[in-house]
Length: 165
Image (cartoon, rainbow, N blue to C red; front, side, top):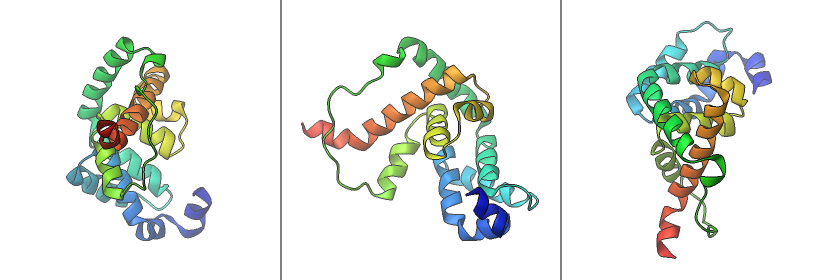
């Protein structure tokens, strides 16, 4: 991705990947209006910035209060549920392909801090350290939030399958 950005320039990347970048902002914020705001703000930066990083920074910036509140809930939950105890209760059946809308709904229904920790570390490939810095949290809490986000996403995507059995 970095090579593509360096060879084409950020404005071309914004144009070519606008749908993907907007989707990233939407999944992070869970809100269409904040996603548009983040996308518009990211367009205001100079051409030396990485568009993906701009979108992430602006999206997180639009939800600072929500992240702070969610971070507190996550810290409490992480204390109550040690790492080995946040598990699914049984083996999950194989699922057919998941539609984009189903995936988006499953992601945005996750509390803000675990959602962002999961998206940044798992889907964007950021290190725990880098995600922690962006989320203004310590690494242990970000790691716990990542775990909670993954479990919640799995539950959300498989909820109908779990109810059938």
